[in-house]
Every structure is written in structure tokens, then in C-alpha cells.
Length: 217
Image (tube, rainbow, N blue to C red; front, side, top):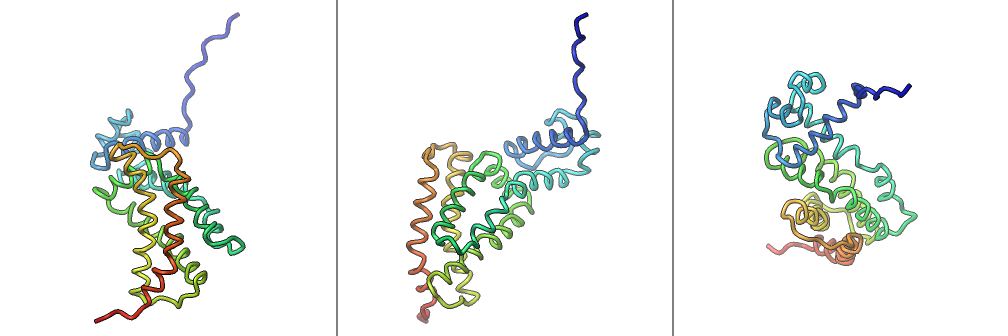
């Protein structure tokens, strides 16, 4: 006797939730955060009551997307890498930004970040605070030690933050060119990232010392 066709497997609650999240990621990356829960449910191909069963509001779904796209892709090994003084600082920064670029330079990461900044408060602010604490402040402290410069004043530190923003933004902008402007970008991303990091590290001692020079009235 031939076996009967297998019935379509019912998704578990966890699998259904993950399916909704992945569909929401694609939707938010394409259209942004303006839709109502009714519109979201229709676009995701599910009923509004089913959406509410897993996510009681659009904000709850957006929070889950934030965790999936940004928090879950953060590699805890990066924190150890940036603080590992057994490695030369230049090597640490090179390794970090090569790996980080491999994570962020994707359509969903870039487009959700841009669209959230335009229409949905919260995601960008929290992520950028995390970035400043776990990357910018750490790298700057290591630069102070590497080049033996005195601790910065609060204003000098803000100026240093702007300096490292230049490096970070140059890498982020590769993704903007590709996934927002739809322009071509070099295929050898590691080489492009390495060049940006090399320029930053070469100029760092001069910039840090210039920031500590007395300002003319």
C-alpha cells in the first residue's frame, strides 16, 4: 500500500513567531514603519488576531525586529577583541571592522536602520548608544594608551568621538550606496575596509595631539 501524502506540518508557536519576525524584517526593510497593525497583518499574509497573539502592538513587533537584526548579530567576541592588548591595536581595529562590515553591510540591516531613523524613534538611539560604549569609547581609550596622550577634557572627548565617527560612517556608507542608492560598490570589501582603517590609524596620533593643543581665542 502506497503511503498517503504527508499532511502539511503545523508550525509550532516558536516557529510561527519566527516566521512572522522574518516577514516583518523584509517588510520594514522595504517599506519602513508607517503601517498600522491591520496593514502589517495583511502584508505579512496573516490575520490581525494572529499577529496580536504574538505581538500585541506594532511597537512590540518592531522591538523584536530590533533584537533580531541588531542585538542578535552583535558578536560578543568583538568586545574581547578590542580589549585584547596581546594584539597590536591596529590589528584589533582592522579585525573588528572587517568582521563588523560583514555583518552590517546587508540590505535588512542598512535599510531598517535608515528607515527607522526617519520615522521610528528608539532603534537608532539605543543602538548608537551601544556602539559608542562598546566600540568608540574603547577604541579611543586604547588610542590614548597607544600614543601616550593625556586624558581628554569633556569637549576633547566629544571631538574625538567625531573623529572615530568619520571612520565608522565611511564603512556604513558603503551599505548606503549599495542598498539605498542602488550604486555599485567594490567587491573586495575587506580591502576597502582595511584602507579606511589604515587612514584612520595613521592620522590618529596627529589628530589626538592637535585636539589637546591650546585653542586660540
